[in-house]
Length: 135
Image 1 (tube, rainbow, N blue to C red):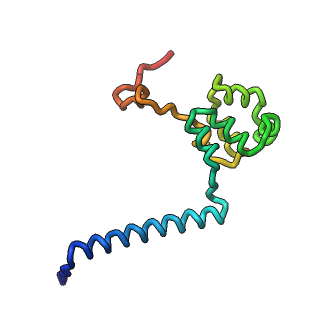
Image 2: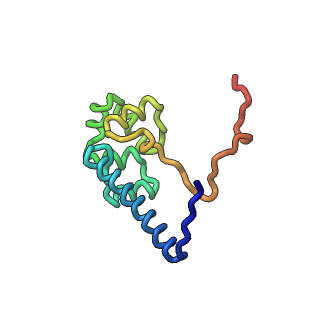
Image 3: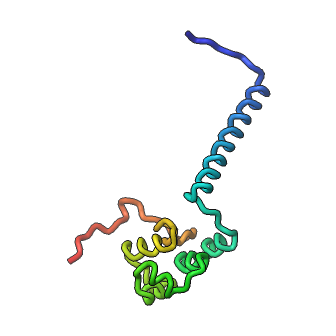
């Protein structure tokens, strides 16, 4: 059965806006539930600013958690010298190392990987990867 309803455009736009508002409220409700359950965390703006300014994510998160390098090393079982090198940008750290640090900091490993986002930096397309075998 094909039923059709005709309403004025203004009424349609009003209903559409209400639908969008409801969707926004549902999203907020989901985030609030995750906050209550400890699955989400709010960050102070100065932490976000430091990350956006390119400061070492490991350093930012360690300081945000009020941990010394020695304490983070103890909790993560990662050598303190590795932590120093990663924070200084001299080393990137292996996936295993970053995983241990992320667990100790109670964050996702993705939060420890900083991406240089700039107009002169772009990700290669699939055809630009060097697939030459290395010996």
